[in-house]
Image 1 (cartoon, helix red, strand yellow):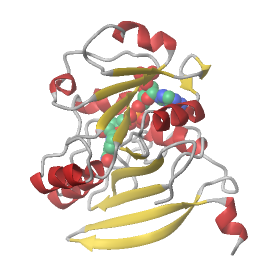
Image 2 (cartoon, rainbow, N blue to C red):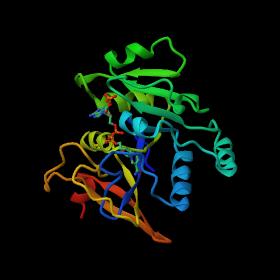
Image 3 (cartoon, rainbow, N blue to C red):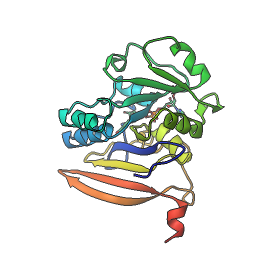
Image 4 (cartoon, rainbow, N blue to C red):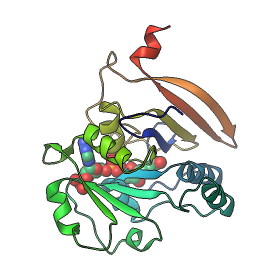
Length: 237
Ligand SMILES: NC(=O)c1ccc[n+]([C@@H]2O[C@H](COP(=O)([O-])OP(=O)(O)OC[C@H]3O[C@@H](n4cnc5c(N)ncnc54)[C@H](OP(=O)(O)O)[C@@H]3O)[C@@H](O)[C@H]2O)c1
């Protein structure tokens, strides 16, 4: 993993159906992956200084993934890390419900938002930190500014746990370095069901290119690990 000087090294971790959907058409919480995938997700969470996810993901689940396995918590202590990574919710609107289970889970919580979205959460105990980013429009944060702020807070390894809109925005800002995609044995279908990358999409020419690092089969699932290829890598081919 390369250390970057202006943002955290960032890995996306998602499970998807064999037809490339991360949830069904109702955007309900995705619970279709196996125990092996849940262990894999927990390992990725445990390897990060912070995990980040969009408000849509939190609205779907109402809670987050935290580290449970004692050996993973032990590994974090050995690396002089706190037992749980910071959990960062991205919500430009700040429209979140303080009754969700998330706000009672024993994890450190940060909010990444706009000055408008920060208002309801200032001087409240739910978030340890409310990070106000520069914005392009009312609902679109400046991701370069966000990356710099997270790195300045000591977050150098970031795991992005979805959903499709946040992954799309971070890819468009060229902030993604690796992806783990678990292909699960079911077909969800539906033109409105989210895929790993939502947003407006890329033209084929502008599409981010990937290098496959590993592909592992466990039961009926395939664990794909990709690295984002950048212009510098491609020009040496
Ligand atoms: N299979 C999996 O591994 C997996 C993992 C995670 C999630 N999911 C599924 O994915 C779905 C949720 O994904 P989603 O795409 O609907 O939502 P999302 O990406 O989690 O969050 C969308 C929210 O992020 C904020 N946002 C949108 N664009 C933004 C931008 N450019 N910059 C900053 N913030 C921005 C907005 O928050 P505000 O509205 O607060 O302004 C928006 O409502 C759920 O169905 C969930 O089950 C699946």
